[in-house]
Structures are given as C-alpha cells and as structure tokens.
Image (cartoon, rainbow, N blue to C red; front, top):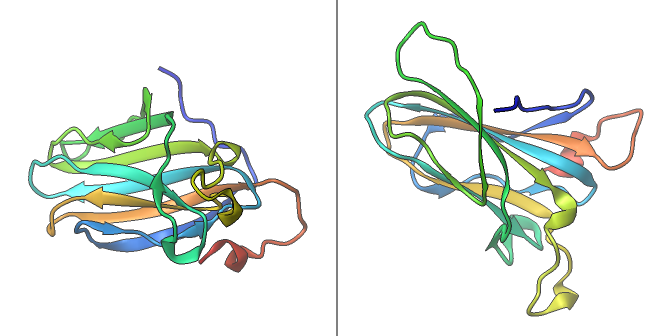
Length: 167
C-alpha cells in the first residue's frame, strides 16, 4: 500500500469545476506535450451508490476518435463515509477504470497515466496520436463531482501557458 507520488512543478488544469454530477464526459485536455498526468477526481455522494469513472483518450480536440485507454494504470482511492474522519488514500489494483465503494460520503480517486502509452489510432494510423484525455462517470444527479488534471510537462519551461493544454 504505497502513497501516490506527484512531483513538484505540476500544472493543474480543471477538467470540470464542482457541479452536480450526471452521466457525462468532462472537458478534453491536450496532453501531447505532457510526460505524465494524474487525473484527480472528487465526488460527494449523497446516497449510497457506485460511481464508475473511466479515463478516455482521443486523437483530436472535442473527443474526436474517443476510445478507452486500452491499458491498466496505477490508481489510488479513498473515501470518508463518516463526517470528521480524515481521507486516507490507498493504492488499488491497476485498471483502466474504477468503481467507487458505493458508500455515501466524500470520495477521491487518482489515475496516474503515462502519456507515451496512449498510442496512435490503430485502424487509420494517419489520424495520429491520442493526445487528448478526459473521463466519463456514471453517477446520480444528487452527487457533486469535480476533476483536476495534474500535468507533468515533457520539457521544462519558464512560463506556464496553461491554455495550450485546454481544448
């Protein structure tokens, strides 16, 4: 059971600000110049239910050519079912998606994705590399969710041009 390691100098990109959750897709983030990303998902689940969170990849902006990752990634997960307790993250089995515990309460989920593993569109390789990521989640209308992507740039820079990451 190891702790999640996220190095200094990451660029935070809001994939979706806090909102009432429904079954939807979050914003697409351009990770073509990223070495690694951490998808950091929060949900406050009002009634006991399972939420399935699935990272997705695409080869063009706005989700063109959307596909599931197609490989397993490191995952950390924690939940607070009782008010006043601390959130403890635990390493989970590597997977391409994750289902929450089903308990009411606050849930936090982190996917660690090496962007070099995203690959290229296999059927028509000329369409290019999968340089965009997003997530889908299945939840209830009464659940508040939000998501931040922490980006480790492939190359160091003196400035953060965060708008280049947002589609």
